Image 1 (cartoon, one colour):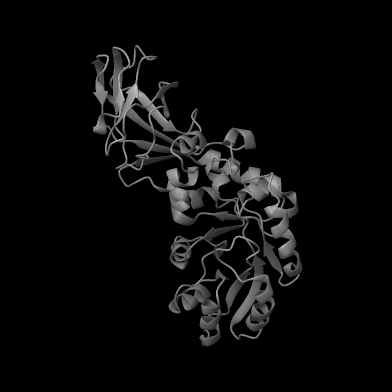
Image 2 (cartoon, helix red, strand yellow; image 1 turned 120 degrees about the vertical axis):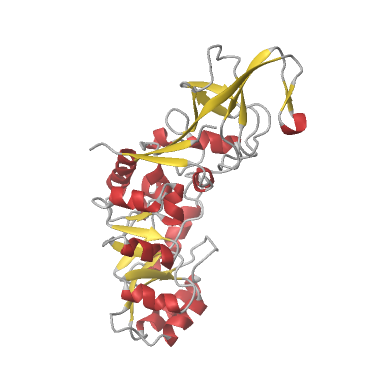
Length: 360
């Protein structure tokens, strides 16, 4: 059976970083958490080494992997420390960590320090996301406590926007106002995620944190990468492995949820939810066959999808099938599957073959 392939265009990745840099005119932490949003952590970091001012990850172990790979830029752990031994790992490897909880603060106060230097800390302020971070009413005392801890250096303060992807909502402006009293609390601040980099100029202060835009998907509702001047990085492809001539009324796939409205050709392509393609993608979800659209019919199964070939009279076994990427926006597939592009990227399994391409 043909193996699905994810082609990763590293030149597009670099273009998208440059787009973020031009839009924000500030230093950037390229967000590479969760295996670089499913694109391959070390490949992505290597492609951005000459451009990125720093890299942001979710967990200390991700940052340690980058240090062991020879990455010398600033590293920021957005999730902070989860257990006490991570404090020494971070301190010894010049890894900056975000503190967002009183238990983390207590661990810092109990830490005896390291011979290799201080721990560099950012404080997260919860300005309205209500997920992680200190309430503004509590944050001042937290900053004072951190300032009194030996072996700990306060590097910066940051926050995260809940609705920056919706330019019509006032939430982001309200969060900026909540954060404003803390802007002078440290030498560094960080506000702008991908959506704020592209759509909220008032957030262009301190360090930006581009994430999804680096990988070629729009951070905004009801828009695609092309609308925002960014390029798709991942193109997911497979091949037709069978073509059938079916009769009117023939039912297709598990549950017989779709029946042929007429005599017609149906193709079978080698990809399914075992590869990470969304099982709940409904009939009508588009793919590209030799560059031309065709809709799914029937349920996605573990290894296979079935495709309406009525508009593809010459489609044959071995023909290319694009699931998303170049010519077919991932945002559109996410909308059909009632999810987001982030999840489509991150859920791809080890059965997918990744092919990295970059111009010499």
